[in-house]
Length: 128
Image 1 (cartoon, rainbow, N blue to C red):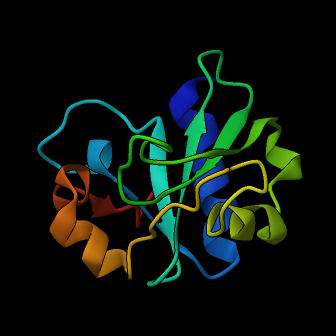
Image 2 (cartoon, rainbow, N blue to C red):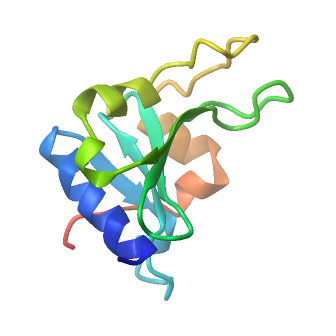
């Protein structure tokens, strides 16, 4: 399985939980296929990407950039497609316990689109 295939299969799972998925590489102006995407319920934002081998996924939180925490914090690595759950997705909306300085979250997906360069070019992954 390649990176795009596993990601798009995971997107179908995540969408079945009621969330939307967006990717800048899914935009029609990009020729590359998506290998990562943002997950949102409209307010909270998480991140999912396929690994280099196309056999597992990584999940991260998303927040405003800072020196202490970058733009996101890892939540889970090497997750097999069969192990993607609603609870795992919801963990990407929070802050991992190991983070020392609490990051500032975006207020909503709209806030992310307005204040993030990547957000400005994201398109929803609708048809696979």
